[in-house]
Length: 411
Image (cartoon, rainbow, N blue to C red; front, side):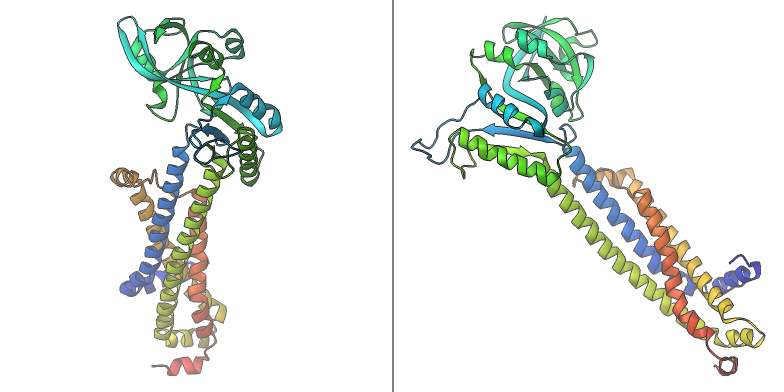
């Protein structure tokens, strides 16, 4: 492998047959280029799916209710379903072993003002666990806590952009804002990876909202963070069981999808995972087919090369060259061409994926930050070396078996 004379002969052979060498490497370079681009696109799709749920916990599950669309147990169609504290307590007590985080939500649109500045914002009344389910990042102060719930405190946590609108660069913690006519103290400022819409939200204790907005125990939603130790199938089964139990408790027809639904991140994650895996298999199938075509192309060219050099091989054998040295020389040449061509294809593909203009265009088609992981690069390198060996070994082995007298008579 490290014989200088052999390497000199290999480079001389390549330089004398430039067109043949280029044609040998082109199919492999194209195969690896296509392979790299396809893998990059699939990775970009996977990144987009991940970012779509970036502002929610991966074990997120929410219960929503509306009006019934089917009669049930003598109850009429169009009946409004209302979640209450007792339903929240039922979920908490019944499924405690499968729950990591739990919160209720009450959704309101409110006008918030501070001195001469004001605007309309989304307000959610929540429990402390909501911070973890929404991946809320506290930049200043704190989030809602259990003491706020017990005392029904008039406190509010505001988004980064809400602070910017109302306070500018001035501190907001400890200040009092007017929320639709009622004074609240700002106890926290948060940011959220979900973007501007998420950072224009505000949060307050759910008990405070129930006292002020109707003096009742109504809830808009129940949000659960299921135990992350559950597999996707177990989490889906848990969500389905909870949905059946809540339908029974709220007197909703088992098939009435309009009255109650549970958004289960496990179902989305399983669907996305299956889709991405299917795409990877398609890419592997297409890339492997192209690579096999490249290997066949190199193999055919090496057969032609060996036929051209038959007399040379005969002379070598007549002078005492071992068959293994002939096989080794041909295989080395093939591996060299394949590796260089593959590296060119891989480098070109990686460069194309890194182009900012291309990334902006692909982002419009839900493909974000397409790239190829190091494991794929290592796998591609190993594949190239093996491909070069396969492409040259068989024809080289046949050539090495030719008797010197037969080889010397070859035209």
